[in-house]
Amino acid sequence: MAESNASEYRQYLPDLSQPRFTTMATQDARVYAHAFKEKGIPPWLHALYLHWLELLKEPFKGVTNDGVVRPGLFPVQDEGIPIDTIVVTTNHALSFLTAEQLAKLSYHIDSPEWRTWSNPEFLLSDKGVRLDDLTPQVRDSIMAILRATLSPEGYDKAVAAMRINGFLGELVKAPSVMNEYSYNFVLFGEPSTTRPWGFSFYGHHLCLNIFFYRTQMIVSPWFTGAEPNEIDAGEFTGTRILHVEEQLGLRLMQSLSPKQQGHAQIYKQMKDPAMPRGRWNHDDQRHLCGAYRDNRVVPYEGILVSSMTEDQQSLVRGILEQYLLYLPQRAREIRLKHIESMFDETYFCWIGGFTDTDPFYYRIQSHLVLVEFDHHSGVFLNNTDPAKFHIHTLLRTPNGGDYGMALRPQVEGIEQKFLWSEGGNER
Image 1 (tube, rainbow, N blue to C red):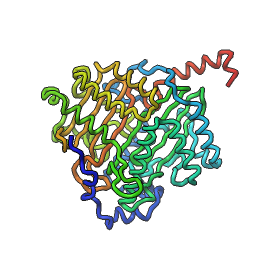
Image 2: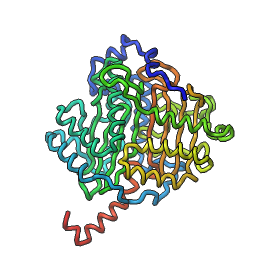
Image 3: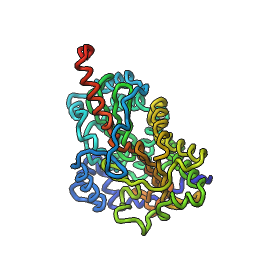
Image 4: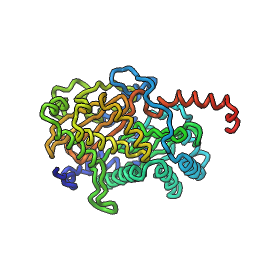
């Protein structure tokens, strides 16, 4: 399979003398966000932001394929999460914060603020603490929480996304808005080895929502992107992300029979005239389940994974493993096995061409998981067509699984029983 030229994006570097960039270069993140909210520029993105606020008013239901939530899909279970280490590391980080910072950081475990993450560079929801406001000691202690929580390879992927964001900030001369640490950390509930709690870590092209209950962890929804997706200059030259998901997806589509390809390819063009109104928009482009889309109905499309050969199903597993990479290994293996058990109800679909050079979109979806991959046109770079150096990926847990919501009624039942038991006095 042909490799893309890492520096292809450089022919699309923007004119930094344009007002968009000269203004951005003089603003910090909060001034930049305030100007966006007050002036509504660019109008299409501001209109989308206002739509997001309307979506937030809806009670949480969860992503579904038909509007009906399937119950009983996500059991409370032991996944071997190192919860003791995570709690100690989190409490250590909190010990460095001022009372004012702690107040801004802390939300109730059931707070609707879980749902106000977003992936554009605009700081649309300024909650928690922002890492680039903190001293290196405090900032590093927050990063230590991520390191303790995620798998080693998942942590490396998150850090790479952050560094690429910093690289983009350097390219467009706006490091106050986009840098390696332009991310917010928000705590929901109190760190505990026995009670539910979690955190959100979000900013441009990296958003992680993580829910804990004892030795179980949900990382969902999450969003990871990059523009460009490789650093070709400076301290972190060679840093690259999202290429494995890209290569595995293309290998899968190319391996299908012509008949299967015809069924899997739901649209031939990335912005296809056959698409219904709203199927494509400026911000999300082809992906359906990004920020504020917590209740989206996404009908199944494409072909069943169970209709594929064993080698093709192995490629599906490889893709899913990349999308579950943030989870520690044991939890990842448990989740992947659960998803595999429903391959007879798991669909794969594709948009765009599938030669080695074509940009594309794909989705894998079942009752248990929904993952999307999309090549985008430029946001900061000026390519008008989707290109392989700008990638968005995301994961949702359908049927109320996002934010650990499907676990919470079960957790509440367990907690109530615990309170009634003799052991309840130990808390």
